[in-house]
Length: 603
Image (cartoon, rainbow, N blue to C red; front, side, top):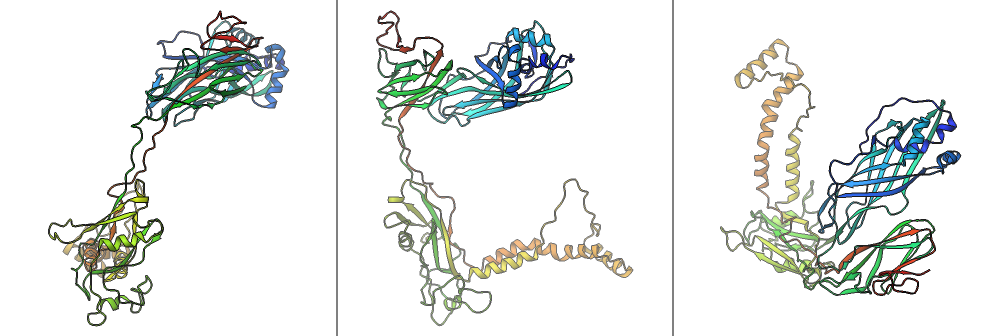
């Protein structure tokens, strides 16, 4: 929130006299002191909010109480004006709104002149403002701050206090009424009078309605409030009522679907007083404090027949290795032996692709240990206990998955697909279709659990780790640092050989030159050859089954048909008096007569 600074010259006063206008002058310290002028362009939104400013803590309140005789009280009224260039009256769900406002404040001319005459100079610090956003918005509030400043009032000049801009972009999130409201303005003032420093923490808050403006967000087929803001009035301690569902014409009318009368409810209670709804009649018992009190109510219509949407059942993909030996292979041929699948924390038993040779069953510990023989030797034996590759079927995978407690029989279908044009009879992958109890929802991703193959994946992992260990980590560079100096001077080939021989013979073969030479002739060639080397080594091993992380079709739950809801605001203005007021849309009653349509006195 930007605030302009105003330079001035201090004028000395006694502490008591200057203290008498501390609060009045403090408010001027919130912004630019200028003569009131009309704006250069009419703003679509311009709302005045009445507020009272007082001490924000016990010490500040005590100081103001000491000077209440001069001030006419220990609080100062101020009129806040909020303007905006473009706040829409209505918006669609999911629409973005630029909720940017400009706030100004103005004191009574009497207080301004009094403060100026006493010459109290004020420093203002910690200036902040808060605006609340209520209703179906992704943003609940905005806060803004302003720079510190120093000001002095001018006699006879109506002063506008520029509090600057507050707000930002919001997005509507559902049906209802978005209201933009003044929450508070606060600041700290420092006064130096007769050499005595006085510090006050000041807080300003609305005394009636804090509503700046509103945006209606509703389905065009939802019920309608006419008007959307319903004005009522009563006296302090009185009761104001309005029949929202009855009357002629009624305030609430159905949209494209019938009303749900029992859905009528209060969604935002007033800040003071008590609001209730009984049998469609809204009743507000007013507090003893004057002001305007807002209540937001909501009613819904039944869902539209075409509302909602069916869910989507997830389809996942299990890709088989494309370098496996053909069915019937055995011995050292590249092939899977057995594997397991995981789904949502549960793991299937081993699914066998080759003949099971019986106990001991393969485990991660006994299959291919780093030292000593493992079970892989039994399954790779060419002559004894031959384990022949039989292939993997959709029925095997489906049965294994259905055996999991979080899947169950009938809740998954596995379909084999053949997508290799060069080998049209080769099964390339399995489509995993979730159905039954797992239909129309987002389900966990299928992952590979255990994997046993010939040659074993464990050996490939160890080989790759060894190759990677030979490749040095890339050199790190510091931004802005000078480029490193090449001890070899960029020499290659025979020129490099001659340079190294010369350095050796002259005794100038430094460690830096030696390290650079080893890097060029040994490390760099290994690094360059590593990808091809790793690819060649990987080709000796069967590819692992790959449960593709991204599903072919992502599962989605059905979209429930929601009621069509809309909201209205009931503003009750409470004033001192002897009469409460009832708004009756059908029979108006005034002291036992029907002379005033819509208003009935009840107290």
